[in-house]
Image (cartoon, rainbow, N blue to C red; front, side, top):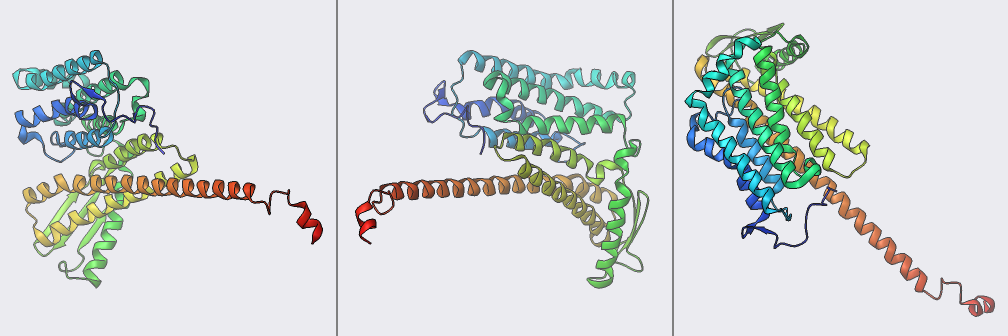
Length: 357
């Protein structure tokens, strides 16, 4: 099902006495681990408020490389260690003046949102590091071995760049989907209010354009929704990760398209569930802006990433089961053909019995 040219049967492939996959994983995630130690407060799960995305990229890297037994030349491994040290040096240098330099050049490029510009470069550096390292370790076909971590980092960098240069509703094509999401949210919230539970007096939700006004148990709460909060960033990251994942699978194109479309619908549904949950939080829990923002900052990731992981695992399970069934059927067919060939009643040589009857 997957391309396994770089997976060896031998379990004794080691680097400096350590299992090769473990050694590679440790080196690749070392910059993330050091950054966690140096700046633990920056690891917010919100996509545009810190380095929380590094944790998910680290999980992708570990999941894809675990169990790989590749013979890696020590020179290549030394080069990757050097790249790791350079990357760590970048993060160490940030509070020593590098961060100020990055922020200082933002006006020259007409950056609209400096915070996203600042985080953007962390993801660019990390994506370059992981991508170059995998290329050095595994050669030109590295993207068939462990692309998900790099793709996730690149996707996050793309989203941050869009947010830095086109914040709020300035990117019309992406903003286009927001009214539709809010209209569905309005209808579902009002249905819940009318038929399931009391969420507040009168109409619980009113949507107009990218504005959503909620009137719940704790009073009114108004939201102005822009494309990042509508889940556009998760859809872009899903698309990139899913394409990389399907690229590795040796299955017919038609099934790849089916899996991709099902995942697209699922991701859109998860985005809608997130918007509804944010509305219910304001309607039922609190209208305190700070508390709502805390929930808003983590709601997307704690819903989208588990969904993506479960969906990918489900696809792997389904295709593995199909592969096993195909092998079993093939073996049964081969066995039946062999039995028929050796059966004297079916090999055409029992002519005496045929004539006698």
